[in-house]
Length: 478
Ligand code: BG6
Image 1 (cartoon, rainbow, N blue to C red):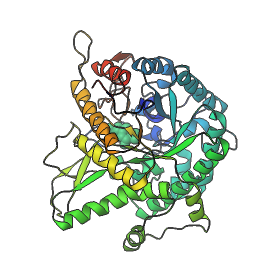
Image 2: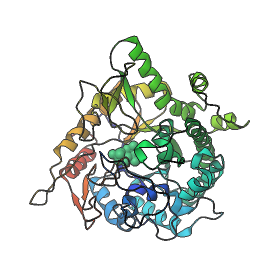
Image 3: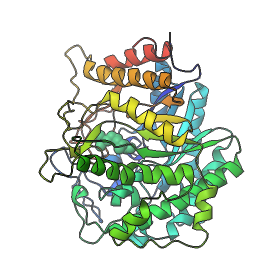
Image 4: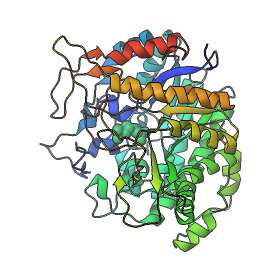
């Protein structure tokens, strides 16, 4: 018997800049992701203001979803997807972000993608901004550090709501908006490129610009939520947070406090603004002690209150520990690392695997916000091998996903309202943190490699059949 609701949204997730390719096709402008070179687990990606002719930029072709979306969506349908989470490339719609009118060819591409989903009764779940923006906004305004971006974003969001009204029911305003609370989020999430930055992993950080940029994103998100509800009262608009579940490394009260403080800034700040429509109590002190004077305009507080989200979504890959001790051993992670947890194993990229942490997180979040939740990213980045007979036995991936689904079931039994589950990179794509193809998440293998070679053909992994069964039995057969 299944504990998942009858209409539970099983599916998968991708992002435009990591799968579409076609970076300069049909009027698309250069986006921030187009100027990031390839990298690896041990070598940082670079950000190049000017194009280097002999350098490999992985997002430019990616897995060519732009030309293969039909084949890919057919495979998702074969797995039984009820929902497909993808993002729209802002620079396809407004090439520099500053145009008065949108690029029709860009809008048409997403008409086709959305229609293809609907043909198979797959609900599109659209992220309006997923780790990219027109690079022209970085060059002219240093990204979200400038208030001008609010109007550009709202114009873009309204264009999407009007165009896809009645077809897209579920929207997310910003992917992992809380990346802006961390230095890595500068360029990745805020389009901020400070003088002197070349390495993605070691960006020149000016905290006030980041927190000011985050404030601008909060206002933009709230205005978009309000406009979206006016344009299409049936649609549901959510937030998206990279949930960095953090435990105290020990029961030493110093570690416990450290973990609480980390959780407040990296997770709760953004969730609270989106769901409750106001900055949480602890930010006053944080801003003061860090000399951060955020400029807010008189109407901003009211805007935040009027633009609260309908549902809360998050990515969950791993958990970390916090300690007050300076010499703890460190593990890596998505966006943020932390102290190593001696009870957990880690992926080849050092991300600590913690399925029970997902149940814990779901309970924490539901207890705090009491609105529907959705896990919109989860998965194991791993090296896959093609056997001589062409098969791929990714039992490690099945094992990871199975254990997380079991814990989602437990959370539902705990009373959590969970809408759906879209594992990350349901088809192999470019890694956001390292720019690699070798770090694969998919149920579908794509023949594309880190030197740019590969014929882009698709093949099913063992996990494809497994996930198909999971969906078919509504999570009963794991
Ligand atoms: C999330 C992002 O942080 O993690 C995705 O929203 C990203 O864009 C995913 O791809 C996995 O991270 P990575 O670095 O392994 O691609």
